[in-house]
Length: 547
Image (cartoon, rainbow, N blue to C red; front, top):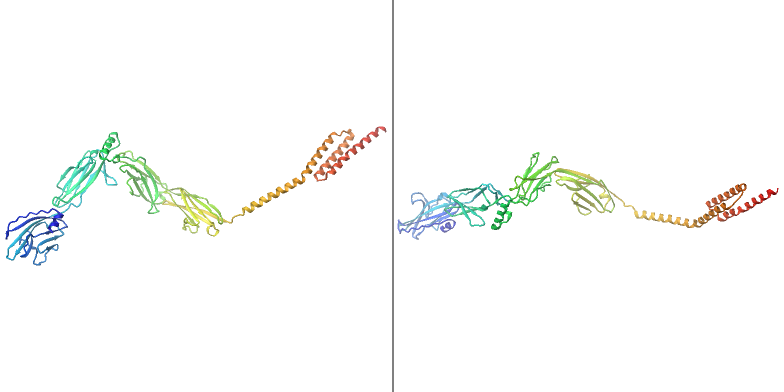
């Protein structure tokens, strides 16, 4: 299978026909890959050959490797193909050397065929290092303008590789920077400028087999925003069709910090620091003045840093600072802070509900960082019985306010204590709410009774007014007439006293009669008696002078 060996590597065949007989022979060069396999073919084997022997080196100088007379070879990697060709598997570098095939015919004529076997190994890997640089998430490297960059490429092979550094800018054809026949290729660019922005490839080639291995890294050169650098960026953008995003651009806003409970464990606190929309990504670092023992776990994109802490009440009031720096604004680092707090909640202590009705209980989180988880529990004697939203219970949360709605209240199942629990990694707070379920009051009957009572009062008052109304009006007229008669009567001084007393007594009797509900004819008869008394007094007065 010499052709298979030639496909894996470089196969060179040099055939020199020297004629027949003992002096006749053929020479060739075969190259095989290490850990592979190769077949050394014994050319021009005659059907009349009675024996074929393989030697490493000159014939009969060393022990026979393999023979067609069924002698077992000393190496299990060796085998005979078609009773003539030597097959070697698991090729090693130590297998290199000269191999001779000896053919013996019936007439004892001997043919020899000599082959030189070379073994090639690698290159398997190519290691590229460009420093000082920083890697972006996609593997692209970036460096600052005017830095001194070191370019190093290493590779192992047998024999030693040929290593090339090739620079490929977008605006021109590739250019070979350096080329050496060694396992190490190293050079320095200083000062670096945006003109050296592009792809740098290291090629390692095995000079024997021709196998090649390549490693390419993209390098970006950044400079701070200035008018000159901006113009250069525009030129490169137009030429390379990259756009300004390939040049340094700090985040447009300040870093943002927040805390939350870990999704993996409710007893751990995660501190998040985010500073997005910068290119390349900024460097973020969490610090604490008290130098607590904690570990920063970088997760997610490079513009976000996450610090994980073990939850404990000792973190109450502790403040943590995230400082962010960017490649073009290292001296103007920005920061944000987050302060941790345990939970605090408030709620109504007493609530009531009518049987068959609905009641709403609320619980408000007044403090807590990271935000606490609010749950509702039933019955203080079983605080671990958590109420789930569903059926007659409806639990909702909007912002820091949690609401529990109980529908179709029942004395046996709903009356009693409820617990509102707020918990975060720093601690736990609970408040009790007592629910009283009572029988509903017949409000309609009470309202109806009040209305009927008011109607009765109005009817009684109206009846009294209708019954006593005419009498009251007539009595008022009598009083007015009596007053007018008293004013018009003129009497003498002595007789006037008796008349006034009589008149006053009559008026008093009339008033009392009216107050006691006497009839009108009695008042009139009393009034008619007054003129008789006046006449009597006048008669007596007239009789006195005659005496």
